[in-house]
Image (cartoon, rainbow, N blue to C red; front, side, top):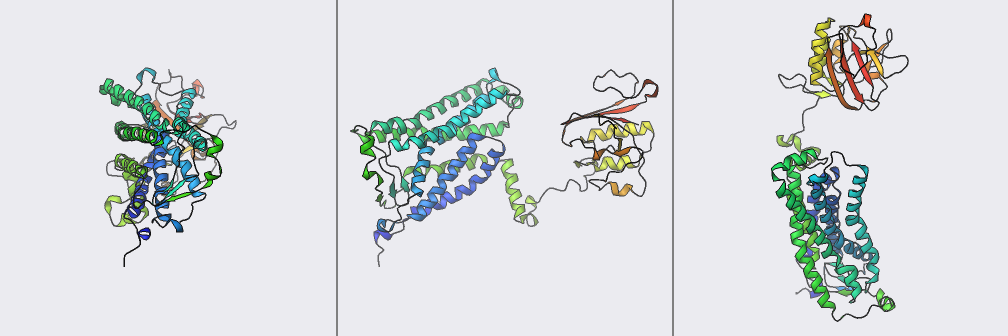
Length: 478
């Protein structure tokens, strides 16, 4: 028995949502990477691809066949979808503008700055917001002006915009995507010119600028945006020509006539398996995003982390997790596992050293060269006035406590003759940088520290500068 034509399930009703679902899964990793690197335009592009693919799945699921009499009218859902579709026509080219503009700024050596000023950062953010957020929002608001009816309802494609055949549709809708594409093409040309001009210094420019880009990431962003621009420009040109010729002859615009009682009518149209071409666009863009950013090192780390979360690390050695930082160090490198509590190898060396000044000095030189934390200093004296200059003295650790100090992350605070652990200081533990050197001469030419000892009691000492959020300084006398 033949299936009625209106109940027939066309292959496109299965292929479209299936591909959209796959693309959504493939775009998760690029979304995480670009959001982590604070690349706002590219993050917006990935988000738009995901949202539009979600609409493909929903529409194909709700209206897969041509039985229009049994269709749900889509009230609420389609009202939202048509607005987002209108915003997407502006936002996708706008993200390309932001991507090309960001790359052009990186290659602009005439205005290069090591640290952008607050005004420069706000100006760059404002331009990104203008093309990625503000312009699409304006398109959504002005959509009501040229909206001939609430929406059209097609099988598989779902909710479709219905434009008024007047000059208002050209001024507020048709003309802006090609204009934004031309702006993106301008910045693209700037990037190409600067890449050609500074091709010999390309790597040095990326290293000197204050950005998260390296050569690979820069080129992948550029070729992704270039590929999408080359694909979008002819499509937007064809859509502009088709919409103009289709609406001819245009009628005079009238708000009252356009928003009359017929404006609320919802027209349902069987598509016989045909799909609007713009429904394939988010699938193509999502695939390109994955091709350019789904195979890098950062993406591979995320895949391995997810595989370990699923427990696959026990089955495949390639996804096994890294060794613990507190585990056994590789041979010949006892100080390779450095954590916030200091190097285990350096702690072990310090425990069995005597109190001789020369031995301690040599040990401190080797220890401070292997770790950037100040927790290797075992004892210090807290100043009674809580000044940032503190004087520390060493103390021999009892033999029965030595093995356990290797594994104690937060030793309790003990005081004996005014001595406390340096780990228990109330100063913040976040370190910006650490400088250390040994001083053997009684005459110090450096202006970094002012010795607190009198000249009669001055001895050979090691000076350690720990720059933290409170800019505290520590001196150690041995």
